Amino acid sequence: MTSAHSSSSAWPLWEVFIRSSRGLSHVHAGSLHAPDATMAVRNARDLYTRRNEGTSVWVVPAEAVTASDPDSKGGFFESAQGKSYRHATYYTTSEGVKHL
Image 1: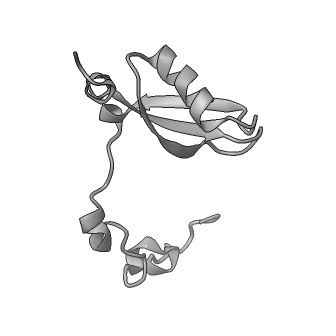
Image 2: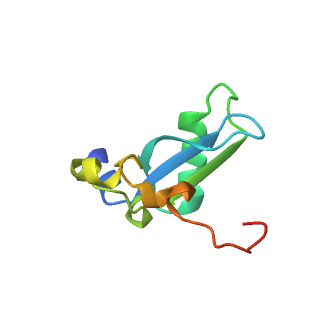
């Protein structure tokens, strides 16, 4: 006999995104295990929209998500300060070129 935990961990992990009202972006609500996309949507609805706060549910297989490395955030999210080439003021305009 297998436990409920070991059988659910054999199911793929899904990331759940909920849109709370029309016009707003979907926001990551959490994760869940489900055997397929249909069950993942149903389970996400039941788990994350109990009080009718959702208008749309997205589920994405966790294995399909590619994320940046949190340990590399310094260089990855470095601001544009000190990178003058990212600003239009760095470039000179050619004489005689209109609308540039």
